[in-house]
Structures are given as structure tokens and as C-alpha cells.
Length: 172
Image 1 (cartoon, helix red, strand yellow):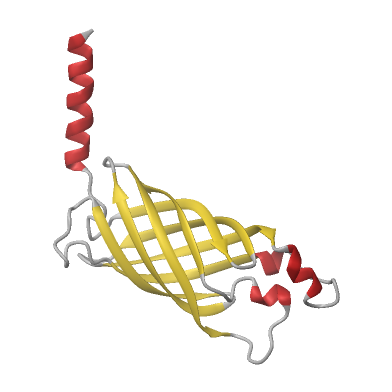
Image 2: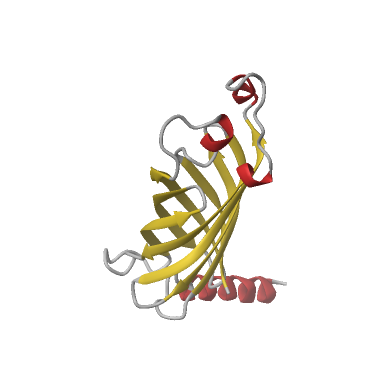
């Protein structure tokens, strides 16, 4: 039994040594997690592909499952948060700075820009990998420019506010 425990401990330690948050060109990352913002909560999924040592591009989407009930009073009790108001998809560009700031290879910081269905914005994220295939992430997002000027309806506000996501990150 001691021998089996020793082998399992050795295996886990070796897998921690080999974990790497961003490997560079041809790296594939998939992330899924919870999305939190002022007027709702939902799920977030993203995929990033490494183009170079410190550059990746990808896609991200968010779907809001729960919408703040106080928004219903915003427009005469008519939130009208249909699928198109709850869903957002974005193309994204990341600058992966883990190797630039000489951090641990298991940790990556990635600021970036995104162009979505609702706005043009930016994000700041961080990933930490426990093993070669599994890690956690935290990402902060904010809009820089909304596609509609003037006063937005309650439903249009849903993806035009600061939000953050946290969850699991996977090497694929």
C-alpha cells in the first residue's frame, strides 16, 4: 500500500512539473466557467489558439441564465431579454505575458481586445495550471465602445457592463 501511495505521489508531482499555462504557437486552450455582472449571471466558454510565442486569438461566448429582476422595472416591467439579448459572441486577441514577466510556467497573464456582437471591449485574464491538462482562470471584461449610442434599453445593458468570469481551463 505504501508503494502505491508513493507512486501516486510521484506521478502527481511529475505532472505538476510539466504543467504549462501557455506554450506558444499551436497551443489550444478551452475555458468554461461562470460569468458574473451587475445585471445577471451566466456561463462563459472560450477557446484560444496560439499564433506565436506570446500571441493568441480565439472566440468567446456568454449566455446569461439569470437576469436581475430589478431591470424589469427599467422599462415599464418589460425586460424583453430574449435569446439574442442574453447571448454574446466575441472574436478575441490576447497578449500572453507569462514568459515576458518571467513568472512560473504554470501561470499566464493575458490582456487582450475583443470584438463582439454587442460591443468592442477589452479583457484581462489569468490562468494557473495544476497539471498539463487542467487549470483555473479568472477574466475581467469591460466594454470600450457600444454599438448603439445614447440610452440603452435594459436588455441592451446586459452585455454592455463590466463583468468577470472564473472557471476551469483545459489544454486540448
